Image (cartoon, rainbow, N blue to C red):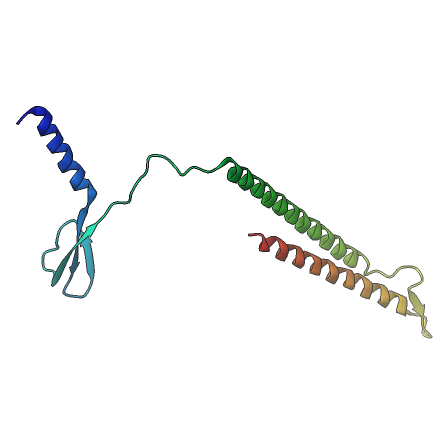
Length: 157
């Protein structure tokens, strides 16, 4: 046998062994299954399984320039939509914080919102309660805006 022929035979055997591999499925007496390169001693059943390696190509799939450009534009649009949605959430969070602060600082009655009574004391007027309701409504609207902004941003995921 010539050295060139021996090298070809050796390469062919190596390629054949890389093409498929045998794995053994051994069922143990307790019912558990063990996979390995060889059969496990004491197994009640041994089944050889031939595994084919995945096909690997040398070059990635080619993408047309038009497809690549469209993909870049889609990514830019998605990023812009995400940035806008995130900005909307931040704006809604700021509006909610401002509404809550206004509600907390508006608890004290303003001049003219107290009415005197017969015993010399004072009580809040209808204007005071109307202002408190308006502040609470502003908080509810700000919370609804924040919830809508978060839902819109989550829809982009």
